[in-house]
Image (tube, rainbow, N blue to C red):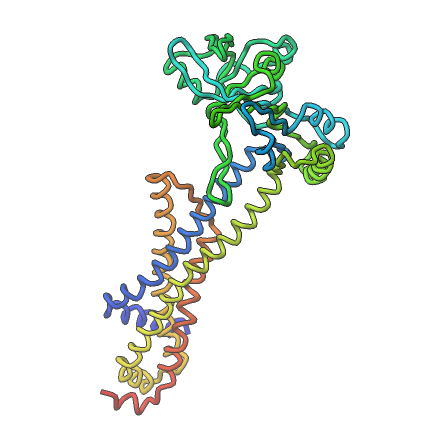
Length: 423
């Protein structure tokens, strides 16, 4: 039995070798099919992973509230000088801390667009007044120096922490910690440099705000030295925007508390702000939404790439049907010498499975190395998962069986006498 099986395998390989060019061309369809499935799934996984990491950087246990100017404030701003009051307030942060259960901490923040100066160099920046625990809640890492502490907040200290981007703009190759910069002509001592948080890609293709050009100062210093109004000039008139806080981050104690805390925060803020002058972002909800979208996206990618495998399978069937016609006399001779139908079926299946498996193996190499090359050269994220490799290779072998079975059965069903008469 073993010798018969061995002979069938040898005959299959000899037939493929006798038509080497045709075998290679037939194999290319499976090769590109498997390669494209693995590569497209790798790019989809890399993109999804990158989005997940960016969302997690916002804090999985955080709820972020942002001030938003209501759409009906345009009429209030008529005249040569007008004042518009909107947005989050210090009382909101206090109310959330005191009334919402399972809140670990709240982080208020107030932003001021300003020009900052060091010696003769100037830069546009956003001055953010906030609290000492801001880096911990926002998952930001100190690069150099330290963030300001409770004593700086208590004493309204003129100290600041720069992001790396603004530090590079102001100091070039100088060491910034210990230097003094000016904000609105007031001196501030640089006590640290903090990492930058990259923006998160949104569904509309845009990007959420980054902190590249932010300078952090104690929130008490911002209230004392910078005030709570922003004055802008448009069409010959002045508009004063009176906003106490631009952002409040609320951190839940545990990840399981995030959604209940978010619902409670929404109720509290809705009751205090009838004008809907705020937005609420829950990173955990965004993470779950992104995960579902990524799963659907990868399914579509796999379906699109699988078309190549289908085309490759059709190519195998077409070639094997042509091969049956070419080898009719050979099949008749083998049947006359004692080969049974199952031997003929096995020989043709050996050929188709060999073509599809070898094509699948080469396709795995293409599918693994293509994302790696693109990632190295174009810096696009790509993650090749072992399950996608195994699945693609298994499907390629299955394609050889499915699309090779009909030609094999057709070959085995030939009448031996008619096959011997075939020219």
